[in-house]
Length: 403
Ligand code: NAP
Ligand code: MG
Image (cartoon, rainbow, N blue to C red; front, side, top):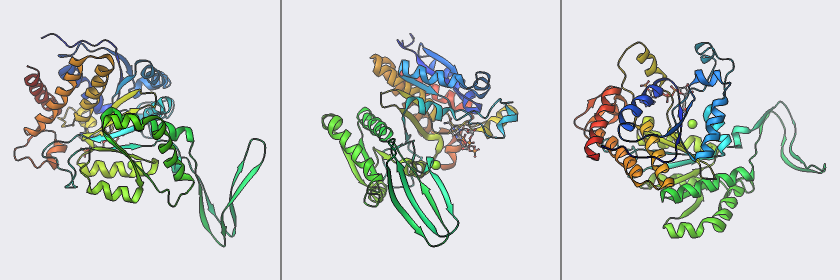
């Protein structure tokens, strides 16, 4: 069998722990036998990030701007415990945060749906994709405890020195205070990433805030989305047969629960934090959540939503068998390969990506699965596979589909 050709490399960002082990197995068993894989490799494993003073993370993000598509393995975000474990020079920042800041992107998360892993919400038939704005609001807030009576004000001092003041509250006793902000430019990038991704995936876009209560802050989000939509996207949406829909956040929550799914739900930072956990849990399993960072310029970075599955890795190091689910990581590869195929007009590569995903789903629906899925699957026949056995089972299914 001749291998499928690629013309432009993918940016490959390797990672840590159990997902690094799976990464190699996926390449060896599911990609390289079928595709003449072209990647520009960046090792974002913590050892190499430490050796390069984290420069490798920055270089990998810059490469993503150059080539347009990246695929990333889960990586450790160091905490105090990792300092001695990896003998770190510094507590390096989250690679995802660094990459997101350089690409100015929005993260879209969507569940992979298979028969037997039923959502808790009975009406949900199609995935709900959550887009979370990743800048500002309560995540960059300044807070104060008010110890006793006194007046609190918002003060803005323009560059020429003129002051604008608004009374927040005339405290009669103790209380609390919070000041938060956002930037029009960041909201504009968020809006464009959302509109682009909706067109890309041919799904409706929903956006919701609390603009009835927050008449300036949240209303600005609403207005920016609407202005950009009217000026740049309304026609394109109409042609694609999709809609942009704005509503109040409380109404959105009610509609989401009653819906069939199959749309993108754009959320402000805090709403996205909370709602993505709600949607992920309601769809069944963290190991079945995909994630893609989309920049307003149209650069894409695909990954799994879960972490490095540390507990399984320690078992693996002791020589014990693991049953770690590789599905979201495989979908990161298939997403990146499909996007590469679209950009380079390589229908064979796009077809391979479709078949690889189909093979994953079929394998699970045939009853072969990892332990995390066996716990929640309603399938009658279930075989719990080790990590290796499961990837082998997917390979067998894939060979059948490609034959
Ligand atoms: P995690 O790796 O997502 O794992 C949490 C637990 O969820 C696991 O212990 C496992 O439960 C289950 N799980 C997650 N993915 C699974 C899979 N593919 N197959 C089977 N079970 C799975 O989160 P964590 O343990 O909190 O974090 C570990 C490391 O990952 C941390 O260093 C963190 O910084 C990093 N992290 C990275 C990213 C990223 O790169 N995008 C995201 C999140 C966390 P059981 O142990 O009960 O089987
Ligand atoms: Mg959260």
